[in-house]
Amino acid sequence: MPILRNIRFKWVISLISLSCVFTFTLPSTGYCDDWVYVDRTHQFLYYYDYTNIKINQENNQIKVWIKIKYTEIGRTFVINQLKTNKLNILNIDKLSYSLSLHVIDYKEKIFTILSNEFYSKSGVLLHIVNTFSYGWNNILPGNIIDDILNKIIEDHNIEK
Image 1 (spheres, helix red, strand yellow):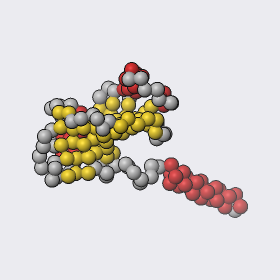
Image 2 (image 1 turned 120 degrees about the horizontal axis):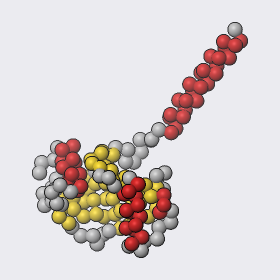
Image 3 (image 1 turned 90 degrees about the vertical axis):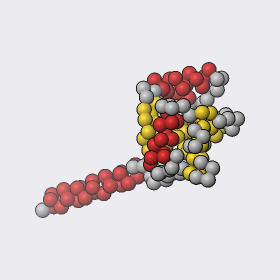
Image 4 (image 1 turned 30 degrees about the horizontal axis):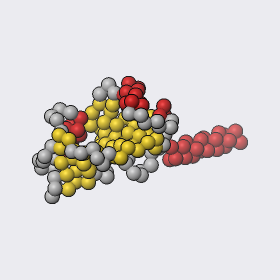
């Protein structure tokens, strides 16, 4: 019987260990857990942050974080663009995704970007570009901002 107890004990310890691994390695329920998939291209995958979106129906504006995950082709493209713009970013080879804070006027169909943040796969902030002078831009039918806006309008039941 000592062998049977030993096997049961090892099984219980294994189960507890496995539970601990899942508890501590699964994503936490902190900031920005609720990324909603919108679309993808051969370069990028697009998401918006469902939880922290701010919708102001009085002035017809949405303030939303947009996440862009890079495919290998997209990552190479973005790194080359950053280098072309003379941005020397430490650990740029670890680039994995970006977060950008957008304000979208859904009646006028215009948007501006307040900030772009570049991150490694492990979530380390590599670089921030504040774009307060970016200005307002038209949302062209069928582009990714139009797709994101339509998804937000659908998900949050906003009247156009």
